[in-house]
Amino acid sequence: MEKRVLITTPYREKGERYEYWSSNVDRKITYTYDKNNSNGLRFLKKNIPQIDILEWSSWNEYKKALNEEDYDVVGFSFFTYEWPRTKKMVKEAKRQGVPEVWAGNYGALTYGVEEYFDRSFIGYSEQEVAEALGKEIDKIEHPMIVDYIGITGGIRGFPLGILFTTRGCSQGCEFCQTPKFCSEPYKLSLSSIEKVLRKYNKAGIDEILVEDESFGLYPKHTDKVISLLEKYDMNWYAMTRVDILSKNLDEWHERGFVGVHLGVESLHQDSLDDIGKNIDVRETLDLLNRLEEKNSFVIGYYMIGFEEDTVDSIKKSIKKLKKYSIDLIQLCVMTPFPKTPLWHDIKEKYGIIENDWSKWNTKHLVWNHPKISQKEMRDVLGWGFKKAYTHLKFLKSPTKHYFRRKERYGHVRTTSKMIKDFIISNLGADVDIRS
Ligand code: SF4
Image (tube, rainbow, N blue to C red):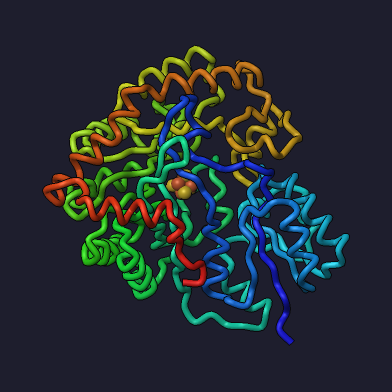
């Protein structure tokens, strides 16, 4: 008999949400990007339809799910900062007699969690999970995953189709867990990419966010993926590295690229060299200027709290950074995540001072910084949230969107397109998770 399997994310408290903008800015009105889909769970469900998935349910919904089904296995997909809630869920599963519990996602790399689980899956694990259930997956199929961009107050503007074209990264930046999670990058098949693009196109979605760790890793594959994006007339955003984008920006811009999630990390070359990021600050700044000329939307990850940082130096960097046309600066406190080279380095030199894993979300100082206290870091982060996101930025993003779409189509959005986007985004025309 087939095993009954539930894979779940951590629960959420009533009214709680993970919204990307408000996690990084302190303004009354901002754009919104709620994350209500778990990419990993959608991939698992698409490729192993027999499993049940639960995405950010309430605590009671989770208990009810355990109660109503006799699951043989409950798997937990979580990040390090979600471990305290996950631990509570694991205990509940055991209390209700679930015979086997599994750990997955980056949280499985957290020190000390292994003892709570019967099995841990490190990396993208459709194949391993299928094998554990006596199945085989011939080729990974890409599910539809749709997120929505909106504005404070709950109005959604347009849908965004999520796309993965490769997985993993072997670059070895010292702060990053990806090389431990998936050290051997690989490509997703073009046929599954085309299938999902066709579905997005059919659903009226023409904005795609490529969430590869580093889009552009394989030039030939990238070229073929972009040809598919062109075939379905998509506007696309990509998560990628400075050096890759710098080399390809002009061509990609001609082929539908509209924006980027970029790891700026630091404006100080020494800091970048220390963390093994292997990029040149001058190249980053030049790239930011070129992106502005092209009206490209930019989310820039910026790390604060390097060893040599002080509160003043952080403030100076943020003031400098804010002069560039970055639509959203995601400020992250340098965090030595488990199993990274940075963990060992920081632990040995300064010591870890935060035992509460829920604070390991890059918005808290978790180690004994030589020049900044935890309170000072909280304050400077709050200062940065306000300072880095000005009203001008709020107004500039739609202007970029306007000019970019006008350049491509001669208009921004036809009235019928706007109505369609509104219906898809707000009136429940959601996408079936098995599609
Ligand atoms: S930060 Fe980006 S480039 Fe560096 S190892 Fe991680 S995924 Fe790779």
